[in-house]
Length: 80
Image 1 (tube, rainbow, N blue to C red):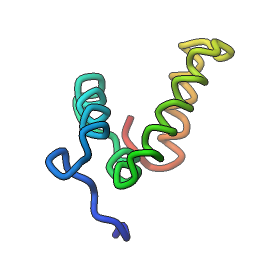
Image 2 (cartoon, rainbow, N blue to C red):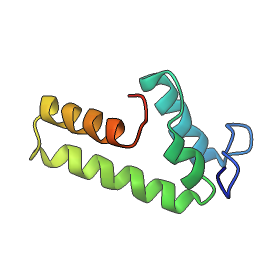
Image 3 (tube, rainbow, N blue to C red):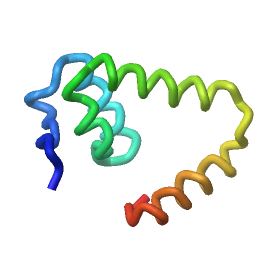
């Protein structure tokens, strides 16, 4: 059981709510990390910025990135 309750869209700050809505559009649901990091909007924004920076750097091919995401999810027992 998590120490922090999962953040809901209704309880989220406006900036975090936008991030949650974007994930819902992209994946069909909100990913667990944002439900936890969203309690502190600056941390959530920093994590999103870091992810976007890595993707925009272009050092990892899209197909390889997808395989990495899948492998890490499998290792953690998470559906992807």
